[in-house]
Amino acid sequence: MAAEEDVLGKAYDSRLMKRLLTYLYPYKWQTLVALVAIILKAGMDVLGPYLTKIAIDKYLVRSQTHTPLDRWLSTQPLTGIAQVAAMYVGAITLSFLFEFTQTYLMQWAGQKAMFDMRTQIFAHLQELHVGFFDKNPVGRLVTRVTSDVDALNDMFTSGVVAIFEDIFVLAGIIVIMLKMNWWLALITFAVLPLIFWATVIFREKVRQSYRRIRTAIARINAYMQEHVSGIMVLQLFNREKRSYDEFEKVNVDYMEAYKDAIMAHAVYYPVVEVLSATAIACVIWFGGLRHLGGSVTIGVLAAFIQYAQRFFRPIQDLSEKYNILQSAMASSERIFKLLDTSVEVVDPANPKTVTGPGVIEFDHVWFAYRHVEEDDDEAATQTAAWDWILRDVSFKIEPGQTIAIVGHTGAGKTTIISLLLRFYDVQRGAIKIDGIDIREMSLDDLRGRFGVVLQDPFLFSGTIGENIRLGTSRIEDKAIEQAAEDVNAADFIRDLPAGFQEMLRERGNTLSTGQKQLISFARALAHDPSILILDEATSSVDTETEVRVREALSRMVKGRTSVIIAHRLSTIQQADRIMVMHKGHLREMGNHQELLAQRGIYYKLYQLQYKDQELGGVPAIPSPVLPEVSAND
Image 1 (tube, rainbow, N blue to C red):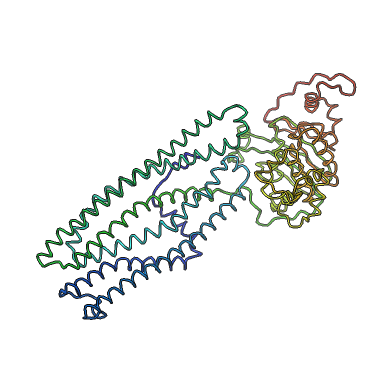
Image 2 (image 1 turned 180 degrees about the vertical axis):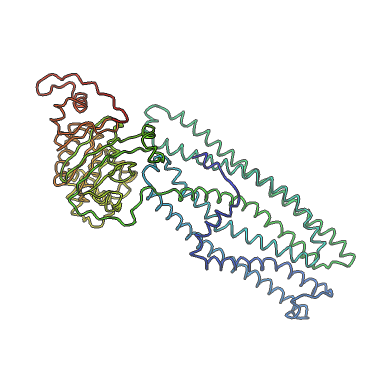
């Protein structure tokens, strides 16, 4: 994550900018009006010194000069000065109105565009398959929606606007100065090479500092997220002091990077001020000599001094806006990289509707999390090179059956569930419901058939009732309470101060693991699924809670197809069929007694859990040695 934040890239990328502007297109009229307001404001800003020149030359010094405004100005000094002053005040007032217009409209359009972008990012994240989140840390994805979008907002609302305004102001000043007195303008511009050189150095220094700042922020975020989440382990192993020292090092890096950026600003702006003062001094000196020679009026000299003061401010602003633009380009590249991530699991163009009783079938399923493209002719040679998690798995689950899946860690149990819910697509074979490949079904239709309880119960911020309903409007309050009753969760919920309206925060950390698991059971039951999936749902609860869960299970599985993954064999002995997975193969299948009689893998698993007990009064028989399974087995 820190390495990705470290890359800033180009300050301007036409490809990225063109794509960014598409977010402003729905608000093109507001943006266009804001752009016109920027141009008019720039015109008002450069008009002031010129009005000062007219007032001095025409009415105070009364030199024989002609201006484009002569037809509208009085020949009487008092009246003419009042008219010029009114024009000056009018220009300032219009400048205020134009600035208000462009600021409001650009901020409005920018916020709308960023709202659309954040919405698009979040919607895209929800469409990505589960494997994407296994490879990308949560902190990085959150940064895309927050910090990176904020950087783009700065560009839209202040960076681009300020750049356009500065360019228009500079262009207007240059044109007027050259028109009034070209050689005096060249004297003013004589310091520009030095300012340009100072700007290049400043830009490089600040660029390096900002890169280090972003890297340090990424490291601080990652370190804080990891160590706050693991605070219990830190305290348990007395690692507070060591963690503090490690955090201090990261924090120092951030501080030093910021200090370098502050130093660059502290040096650059005074340098520009000194150079601009030098330019003004040159204007006064050479302009004064020319005035004494009669070739430059006092009004021109006064206007040049004001223009010289205004000329160098946009140059300073452009140097600062360069950093905003560069940061925005880097952020946009990271955001578009995320948005361009392909959605691997998609709805079919013409989904089929399943109307049968719900027969589930795995038909010669092969699956690997890491797979490569292969030609049909090379399939046989490349099969052995793949990291297969499931190998030629076939079975059928009839409606209303309770199926248990057991096996060692990594045998492929949870993978079967992930494929059934279509979190991933299989490489070979097919998974069917009532004879229809699940890849031909809509995801909403497919996943709406399942109720799932995971090993690690996840609760959202909100009330207990909202966590059970989970946004499904058809579930009424009575159904929520009935589901809680059926899973033996109603008693402890009603004992809470607010009952079903008790607010939960931070994933429900105020509840015990068993209580959270019971709420997860109630959630699954309240949605009344036709197929129930329990993935290690009782592995993290105590014995008393497990007894309550077993009672709840007996009610939940009635009339439903149920798939249970469990390490505790005591929870699945009453299953209609037990499937034993070993190294990606379906090795055994049968009920509890049939599998014990085979004295195979299931028998060994049973002995490992009950080695101190006797099976039916007969001492436990030594576990058989499991044969190795080849890739082609």
